[in-house]
Picture: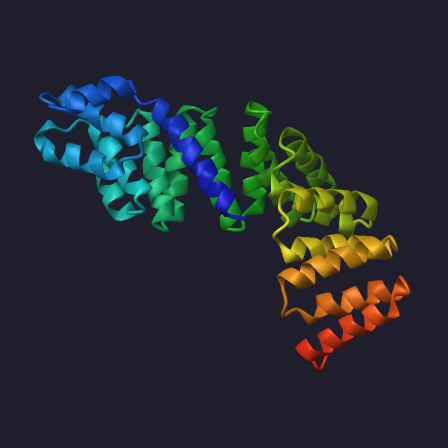
Length: 313
């Protein structure tokens, strides 16, 4: 489930970068890059390359200018480029320089906190995010990333507090609603979690993590109709996962929808061909449908895969 956070982090970087004191248009940057002569021209050329995703070129432009000509903004873009290239060690060097020179610029400290988190220094990253929030309690990128740090450290109570603040400030943030719901699920507060997960799915009905987590909460609460509906939505949007087909099939088993159950476990078994349980559950559904020959074939396949446990537990 972590892959979506990579995307979220990239979006937050853009938000933070937009608050940098020096911003140039792409066209002007390209024109300047042809022959940068002064510090501002060099920085604008680097900015244009950064927003084009040409991070190696950002580094080449700014490092060739020499340390004596670099500004805090230049160090910020150098550090940000190294983060984008997954090189937190070099990123930290430049971002620390940017923060030391201009400690009041929040986006510099935000990127420093990101680099610290990526390098594994979670406590230091958390301290930097807190410093940002002391100066500006509504700085959304810091709130979201601080919540994510706490979540990854399994400090779900703190994570829920930061994500609560995030959704209050930005009630359209479906990612924060999901993370708040996930934090509450881990705290055993599933009733509260449901309303936030439902808000996430309402804001973005195609966000698979919210759909699957809310479906699992419904399933545990024996709300099988609701769980089946959501798993159906998941499989309509992301039909490649055997586990989600199986979860849908489990819901339909509880509802004694044998035909639907058979369809789900047939799909799951076709994707995960080494899973004996899927074949056995397919056999069970076919048996209930009185398709005895097909049920026997499914049980036989389960036995061939796992001779010691050919039937569903």
